[in-house]
Image (tube, rainbow, N blue to C red; front, side, top):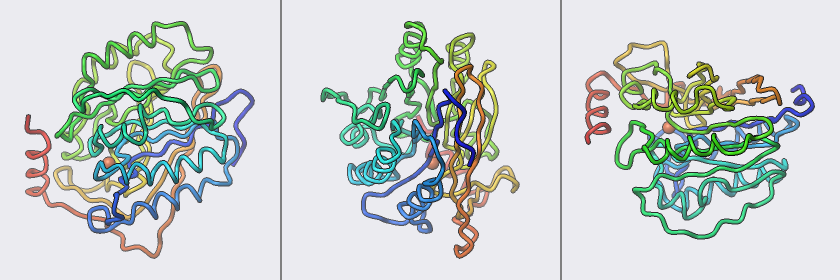
Length: 304
Ligand SMILES: [Fe+2]
C-alpha cells in the first residue's frame, strides 16, 4: 500500500474483536482470536502506522483474560510498528475487566511507548474516559456502553468531558474521536434498536470544533457517513460481517473479517482504505436469526 503522505497520521482501525477469555467460539462459529491474528497478519506489511484503535466490543465475555489476549496481540503488534494504541468499551465489554487490563484504554502512546497510569478505582457505573496526544492529534475515547444493555448512550458526564476536552488548547492537527456505537442509522432492525440513542447531543458537542473524524464500530460492516459535517467511519468487524442486503427484520452475518486503514492529514483530510481477510475455507454464514429471534434479542437488550 502507498505509504502515508508526509505529516499524515495513519490509523489501523480495528473493531469488534469479541475475544473470549477461554477461547470459546463467538456465537459457536468463529475463532475470534484466530480472526484477529489473521487481520493483524494481513496488514503487517502496510507501512507507516502511527496509531491503532480498537473501537469497542474488544471482548465478548468481559473477562480480564480476554483483555489480556487482546493486549498481547494488538499491543505487541502496535509496539512492533511503533504505533500508539487506544481502545474503548462497547456493549459486550465489562468496564471492570477492561480497566483492570487496559486502564482508561490509552495503552500505548506515540511511538508505541507504554503510557503510565495511576491506578484509580472507578465503579462500573462510571464510563471509561481517556484522551492522549498522538502526532499532534488529540485522541479522545468516549464510552457509549450502557451496563446491561445493548444500545448505546453517551452520559451527560461524558458529553461534558468531551465538550471540555475540545475547549482546551487547540491540538495542532485536530481531534480524533473514538467510540463504539456509531451516530449513524443502522442497516438492520436489530442494530437499529441497539444504536446510539443521543446522536443529536453528540452532534451538538462536535459541531464547529476541531474534530476531524469519528471512528466507530458495532455494526460489523464498513459504513461511511457524517455527523455535524464531521466524517464518521465504521470499521468492519473482526469477528464477522453483517449481511446488509437481507430482510430488515432478520439478522445474519458471514464469516469474514476486516479493518480500515485511515489516513488523517494535517489539514483534516481523511482517506480510508478498507482491508478484508478472505476466508474461502470457512462456511459462509456465521449465524442467522429469523424475525422472531431478532424481536426477542431486541426485547432483552433494550430493557431498562
Ligand atoms: Fe460487536
